[in-house]
Picture 1 (cartoon, rainbow, N blue to C red):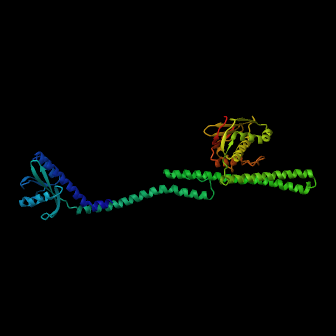
Picture 2 (tube, rainbow, N blue to C red):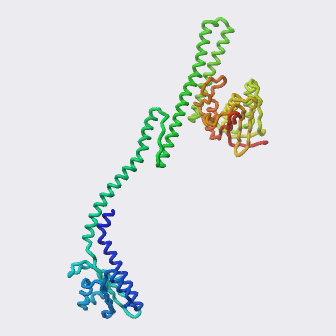
Picture 3 (tube, rainbow, N blue to C red):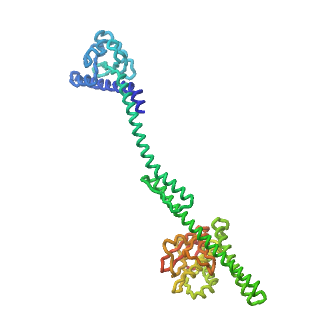
Length: 451
């Protein structure tokens, strides 16, 4: 672009610039005429500085003023002074101009030089005057040739410099991406210990941070998947082993002994029921998370549901000698699927009983705020801060030394989480190691009575 503008448009730009300079000199002459300061030395300086010669005539064609810094190179001297009759042509050209002035490019045949002649009509209260200025246009062929040669060297230098800079910058930007690609290939092969290196560029830093986070999460999911397989295998293998063993005992030992046979069959039935609960719980989680099961929204009394749940679990509570305290209004009506919310409360209370503290106290609170909030509180061992975000995951086990659940399947919190998510309800857990845990969720008001 620089080459194009400097070479192609140089002639036009130079001529426009020269015309502007000549107009500037004409402005000074016009001011001098109107202020009667034609003898001011500034006019001479303007002519010399801008390489201009000029003539001023009145409307009768009489020469009033002459300034010359060109000498023999002044075209006006050859054209008008040498032949005064030609002044009428220039005056007429000026009068016919719509703008009151004209610019005439021409060539001095004597000096073989390009130049321009400028004419302007000045209308004053004491008469009309005509300014004619002449300025040569310097030959630009040699200048253009010099510029072309310069641009060749400049182009080569810029090309080499830009190539070196681009190689350096691209290498600096590409190296982290190359390393990321190698790390991604390791990640694709199951190596979750890879680290995506950061760089000086914020965009690459953000990408590296995102990939490192994704790698950590994939590693956790892989660990949870292995735990799931181990835990489910253990849950299934143990009852199958028991069923097989007691079936063989019935066949070989107790088949003819009704008492022993019934005891063995009871064990088999208990193990089959455990397997049935495990399969049902896992199926329910899958259905809830895939939105296969629909929510039957209705209005129900949450306080009555809490008391009915505690009544249902009375035997379990008595067996553990637990003291239950309920802090609630007399009635609180909410929106939701009463069957599934009952299951959530049951699972939260069951979880609290499993982790009850030494004081054997379990508290249930129903709070009325923007929404209805229910809290189930125990004073047990609590959950560490690093484990707390993962307790809702069906794959996650806080205790890695897994033991089979003697009551339930160990999927209660995962089921509760899936149900509450399907209700678009807020829920969570607050816990501190050694002080206990609070599990809570919120539902929308239906109506509120007798608080």
